[in-house]
Image (cartoon, rainbow, N blue to C red):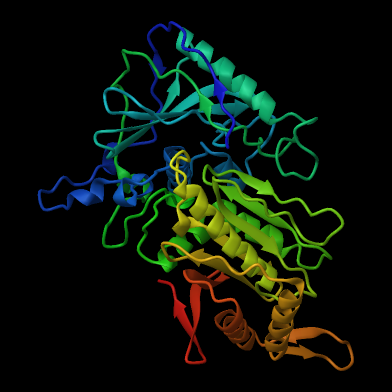
Length: 448
């Protein structure tokens, strides 16, 4: 569970603001009477059947989209992409730390983030959703009032805590050290902004300028790249959201560079954009794939010498993850619920990358295999996948017929470890392909 930094509410004076919006009037829709109302809704703030929406991640997605569309540099991702990031000079919104989502009495939803400069919290940025969730504004808070002073102190302490180099994190964890993103310290609970709250003096706009309009013909959406909706239209659509995410793509690139090592590497991605390096299990070549309620993706490599697709142990892990999430959701005290349809499990190898998504409402656990039963499973797995394997006579180098390997893997799943709701994808830089085995024939469905 996330830890929370809690502040008892203090008497606060009125909030003064300097407006810093990323919007222009051109971002509005045309306003035609013939225009469907759904086109004014944001995809990242839409979810099926009013299930959980991650507003903090939604604002992150929108501002990163805005940077990408307009060539601006509000976010760390944009600065890194442009090669303009300097840890001592760059100013950017830090999304790994954020307040709780606040629904105010005038219908506005706020999430506040720290602005980082010179490696310290130097300002505050509010993401604001208003007008029945059809307009977004990003607003830099003015420093000339007591609300700012109190909230800024909370974020300064949180940022310092997230960057502690001793006691909380260890080198190689991928967070908390100089040049790395801060570690996730959980949701930061702050007082809501007091009245009066400014309602004008800047520009606000809708979903078109962020390339993020909701269209029910495409799907019910939910959560953008964080993926919090639970009834999205197709696994292909959800897989595309994941693989288009910059963090996911960067992790793929990193893991592809590690397949020549003698051990596995990996990442865990959280619903709030958290990205953590997986630690190796002591004395082994495998990684510790511990998951949490906010985990939406586990990614790991298979080094050369392992088969370039999921192993029987990987299948067991994915099944355990889904069953664990089902059990977590069944407890009324646990909130928010884990959207099963957004869970992604990925393997990266020298020969290709593959992902599982869940396309069902529930699944059943695999048996508690004895060691003998698991050895039999592994033996069958090796037999089927070795049919796709070739070894050079002179050099001894190994190569694979990947279509044959995919077919053998799906045959093994269907016969020995069938898991209802598991959808397998081949991931490439040009797109995703859903794979299935029908009457012994490999069926490839290219995702649009």
